[in-house]
Length: 330
Image (cartoon, rainbow, N blue to C red):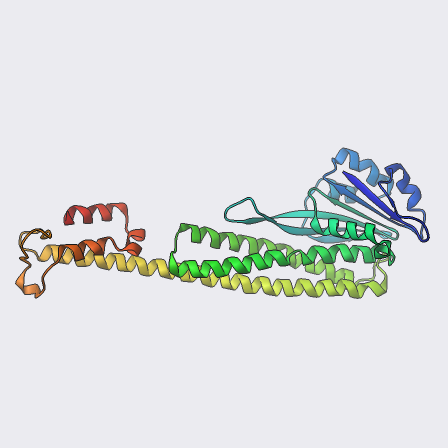
């Protein structure tokens, strides 16, 4: 799908413009054209992008290849690659996906290209349609609005991760299981993927805030600096969350290790009591108590059996160990 919107001072806002009009509209230096490609096939997007006189390498990058965040200066326009992360709600445990957003920024136009719907672009698009003044400060400021909304959409993911860590920390002590471990590794994977796009994206915004680009007005660089600061804070939060996940994983392994030790101690206790009986048998509840006098205790069948049925130990003990214990006791 291709959607477009054109702003011109003193004239009504135009939408759903024919691609054949794009070359004429961008010759109007007072106007602002925004064209948004959503999952548009390359064969139909190619001639439209070529009409803007973009370099074929930049077009190939936008339509065919996947890149880490970057910025290329082509003189009278910039080609920018950004990544965005969004939640996938139909998986258990929950997960995220990363998609690419390609942007061409010119002196009086913005072109965005993406394969899936982007919430931040939809939000900015709706605001521009409701209030044309939203685009009155030029294409570089409009791009700032798009990127700022994209970065702010990381916050729901951060909050989701924080809630998941709290849940896992409680689960580690109450009922550790293989599902707990799966959730921990999901968090580690999500945080690592986020870190991989935050670092290069931070550098892209740093360049946009500091370098002298022809299509970015000097007065708008401070806005890109603000986004850069947001990305720095997001990276710091990401590092803190990774430390929390690593700590939860260490605690999980420690709890499991302690449960294993308790299981082995119970097995050893039963084996010692078994070997101490002269006839190598354990009395059942219906037999008279005839425990060895040198132990100084009466061996109760139900107590030994309860040891082997310890809830935590049964999670760790192997099947063969449990069968061996059952055969010896019963």
